[in-house]
Image: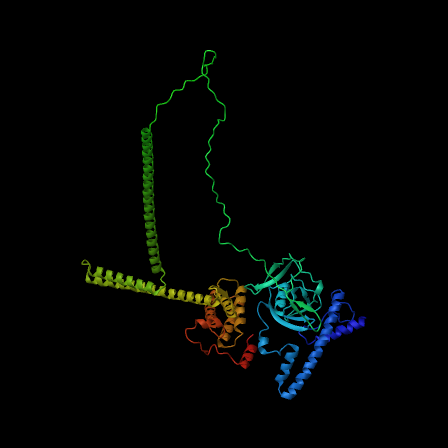
Length: 586
C-alpha cells in the first residue's frame, strides 16, 4: 500500500513539474508514506482526485500538441500551433507585455487551479484582502456558488477565511492555491435563514458583502404552478417560478383618520337644589333663637357709569406703564449703541496703530535686511536724498570758507562711498538668500505628490515612482547641507551620495565621486570642518546639478526653462569606458 502511494505521489510531482502550481507536496520524498498534514483521509482523497485530473489534463495537452503539429505542417506557420494550444489548454503563450506586468506594488499575483474542472485562473489581488473576499471575487467572476467553493494550499491544507492572502506568500513566486467546487446538495438542500451577497466594491476595490435575510412565511403552502418543461434526455422536469418582495403600503393622499372633535352645546338647568333649605317666621306659638343671627346690609350700588370710569382709569395706568417700559428700552438701546460705537472706534484706532507700527517695523526691516529690488531702490533713493540735503546744507553755510566747504564735501563723498559699499554687501547677501529659497522651493515641488482631479471634483494626492526618486535625492541634498554633525554621520551621507550617483557614468558623476573620496580621505585624517567648506560647497553645487538633470531625475523635466539637451558633463560614457573606470576607482 505504501509503495502504491509513493508511485502516485511521484506521478503527481512529475506531472506538475512544468505546471504553474509546481509539485504537489502531499507526500514526503523519502517514500515513508506519511503526509505533511498528519496523513488524513481527506488529503489522500484530494491527492488521488488531483492526480486523476492532472492525468486527464496531460492527455488533453498531448492531443492538443499533436493537433497543433498537424495544423502547423498544413499551414506552414507557427501561429496555428500556438492558436490550437491556446484553445485546448485555455492559456495563451507568454508575451513580453505579460512579463512586464508581473510586478505590481501592493498586489499579490495568485494562481488558482479550479478542481475538478482542472483549469487555471491567474489574477492579481490586493494584499489587504482576506481569503473570504478572494473567494467572493472568484465566485462572482467564475459564476460559482459561494457555499460550494473552498480554497486550500497545494499541499491540501484548508485556508481559513479570516487569514490574509499575504500569509501564504513564499519567496518571489506567485501564491499557488487549489480551489475545489463541491458537489450540489440537490434534494438535501435546505434554504438558510440569511445569505451573504457581494453588491459592490469600495474605493480600494475590496468587495462589499451585505447579509440578506430570507422571508420564509409560506413554506407550508403549496406553490403555484406556472408551467415548465421536461428534459427529453434525462426525463427531469423544470418548473417556472417567480418571486416578489414584500410590497410597501401605499400612502393615501386623502386624510382618512383625524383626531379633530366637536362637542354639542348643552345647556343644563337645575330644578332642585342640592341641599334642602327652609325659612321659618316667628309666631306666637313658636320660639326661634336669634342669638347667632347676623344682620346684613346692602352695599352702595355700583352703576355702569362708575364701572366704565374705573376701566378707563386702569387703562390709563396700563398705558403709562407700557410707555415707560418702551422708553426705558429705547434708552437702553441708545446706551448700548453708544458703548458699541465707542468700543468699535477704540478697536479701529488700536488696529490703525498696530498696522502703523508693523509698517514701521517692516520699513526698518527692509532697510536693515533688504531682499527685493524695491527694497534696494528705496535705499538708493534715501541715500540720494540724504546726499542732496547735505550738499545743500554745506553750500548754503555762509560761515564756512571755500576750503572748509571742499573738505566737508570730500568727507560727505567718503560717507556716501561707505554707504554704497554697505548696500552692495546687503545686495550680495540677499541674492544668496533668495537663491537658496528658490532652490529649496523648487526641490520641495519636485518631491511633492501629484494632485489628480477625480470625477467627484476632489483632488487626490498620488505618489509616483518619479516623485519617490526626487524625494530621495532631495533628502540626500539636505543631508549634504547640514553642518556641525558628527564625522560618522557625515561619512554616511557622502557615501550614500556616492552610491546614488554611480548608477550613471558621466563626467558629472565622476567628479562627484572624486570629491566624495577626497572629503572622506580628509575626514579620516582628522581635518576640521572649516578647512573643508570650499570642498563641500563644490560637492553641493555638483549634486544639485545632478538633481536638476532630467536624465537622472525625471521630475526635474517640469522645471526646465528650455528643452533639455545632453551636454558634455551629463553625456553617459560607453560601457567599455565605464568598466575601466570602475576598476581604477573603488
